[in-house]
Length: 397
Image (cartoon, rainbow, N blue to C red; front, top):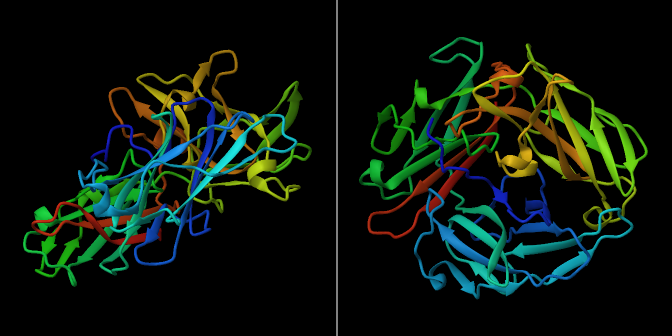
C-alpha cells in the first residue's frame, strides 16, 4: 500500500484557536465529503474560533488533480464567481464555559459555482494567511464501479484481513490508454494514511478493468471503532467514567480502554462523529467544549508512536493526538479538547519511519470487522488538463 500523500487529511488547522472543523454533504453527517456534479446538492463547511471576537475570514477554492496537487487551471476554468469572498455566516456561542464563534459556509452559493468534477481544496484565510483547510470532491453521476469485500484473502482465510475485488467499466469514457487515463483510489474508513493508490488491474478486457486476487487491495481488517458520548454535563453516557468541573472548564474522563485480543462487535459509525447537546435548540452554538481524557492500558511499546484517531480529527496523525506513556498508570494517555457529542475513535500505532498507521497493536485485526470502503475513479482524457472524478462507490463490508 502506498500513502496517497504525506500527512494528508480531510481537513486541518495549525491554529490552536480553530476547533471542530466539519464538512457535511447535503445535510447528511454520515456521508463522505462528496457532492454530485450538476445537481442541487451542497456541502456545508464549519468551524469554531475560540473567542467571541469577530474575525474576517475569507475562503479560497483550488481545483486539484487526483493526487491533491493544484491542477494549474485558471479560476475561470473551474468556477463561476470570485475567490477570496468573506465568510458572512457567524454566531457567538451561548451560555458555554468556552467562548467561541461558529462560522459556516455553504458551497455552491450565490457567489460561487463550481464547474468541474474532481478534487477541491478549500482554504480558510485571515489577512492572507491560511488558518484552516478542507478537502472535498465533486463527482459525476456515472456508474462505472462495482466491488465486493471478502475475509477469504490471498494471504489468509477468515483471519485478519479483508480483500476487495473490483470492476471498472470504461463505458461512457473515451479511453485509449488506461494506464495513463484511469486513476483509482481505495480508502478504508476514509483514511488517507493507508489508502491504496492506482492498483494494477488483473485483467484488461478493453471496456472493463478487473481487479481479482489483487494483493494491493488487501487491507488489515482492524476492529470495530470504540465510542463515547457526552451530550450534556450532568448524566453519564457511553464509555464515560465521569464528567467533572474544574473551574473554569469541564473534563470528561473516559473508562480506561484495554488493548483488544478478540473481535468486539458494536454498532459503530466507522469513525464518524456527531456534535450534539441534548438540551440545545442549536447544537452549533450551544454545545460546550470539554477536555476529554483518553487512557489505553498497555505495557510500553518501542519503535513507534500511539495516536487517538477518528474522523473528528480529519485523519491527522499529529502531535496533539499523540499519546504519552504514563509509567505509573501503565497506560498511554492523551487529553483532547472536544465539543459535546457522540464520537467514534480508535488507537493507531505508527512505526518509526512510516506514515501508514497499524490497527493490530491496540485494536487487533479481525476479518469480521464492518469496515467502509470508498472507491474513487478518476479519468483524464488524452489532451485534457484536469482529472475528472467520474464515479464513486461507498460500501460497507
